[in-house]
Length: 371
Ligand code: HEM
Ligand code: HEM
Ligand code: SF4
Ligand code: SF4
Image 1 (spheres, rainbow, N blue to C red):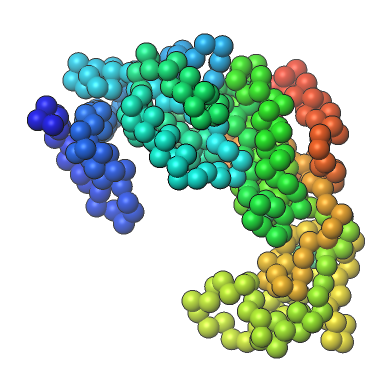
Image 2 (image 1 turned 45 degrees about the vertical axis):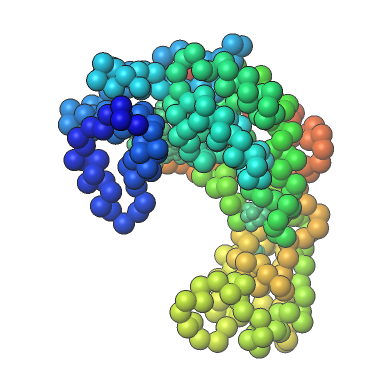
């Protein structure tokens, strides 16, 4: 490894001093293993800090045949100094629903990326994709071939198209889930392949699916179209378990927040008084809920999960329009459909998707997201 060239990067060194693990350490570790581009990345970044401007020629059209998205092109404008990152393109790879892998798959993927690219990855990008960071233009098609033929994986979205849909782990692991989030995410991905890979929209578009209103994928804050599991019948109550919480035999919040002594559990103070719609009472020794007033906030269920469960007549609430535009700042979604059944093949929901996209493609300005 005598031919490795390390640059003098005092400002990068400084980034290592903070309390969090630093990407500088990660890149150096990889660099020491014989990967020159890791040192060149740090070198170019040092230069950008010094000059207070980027040394990536941002964007540029580069991709794989037939696709308008999935590859994000980067070229260095100081390639003479950092030749190993003259091209340093990123691929977005469509992650499996809920990000379920096995280690054999991950090892194989990393081996492929060591061979075809820098070996540097980001698991996962904010949108959900597996991100393979840094390769040259001539390696794009071979990487795409490997992904599709050896791994059964496809590219994710980038640019003005549908971004890779994402979901919480849903019924696979979570008893709160009112939806088969993985089935929905997979079906949307397969149905809207064209929209995912061929940009035709005014700007990006994101679907995110959460199995219940706890919304673990933060759909409501980050997606153009949120699909949130909910129920339209009543919260299921196990009165015996309610008593066990009140008597201290069961720990509230499944034992979370136990780093401090909060005193004995007080159902009035910690559940009933905090219900945002004030629809719970203790009627003698029984907990009563006026379900018509319940807004499905999940607070009571999260606090006493052994006693309370979502209902059984399940479906989804649909919201539109979360985004973080630079000028106006972050914006949450707006409720569009309070309840819709979500059963395969999701025809009713897809009719709504057609209407929603028609409207947006007609009315949306260039780079204006829905909402
Ligand atoms: C207060 C400031 C910011 C807010 C509120 C914000 C918010 C967001 C949100 C909500 C997303 C989308 C997450 C998703 O797709 O699920 C995002 C993605 C992204 N943001 Fe920001 N952002 C901020 C500042 C910045 C800055 C300063 C940069 C770069 C100079 C940046 C670069 C990006 C990039 C590259 C992505 C896409 C990442 C990926 O998909 O992996 N953001 N940001
Ligand atoms: C190796 C270096 C870099 C990588 C791998 C990278 C990666 C990405 C990716 C994957 C996206 C999302 C593109 C899309 O959604 O279509 C993005 C967007 C963006 N990047 Fe970078 N980036 C890099 C360097 C930079 C630098 C140096 C800056 C600014 C100083 C920057 C600023 C941004 C901004 C502002 C966006 C949002 C563009 C939009 O509105 O969609 N990036 N970047
Ligand atoms: S959003 Fe709800 S169903 Fe999905 S993982 Fe979180 S708590 Fe479970
Ligand atoms: S889910 Fe929220 S609104 Fe509904 S009864 Fe429980 S605390 Fe009240």
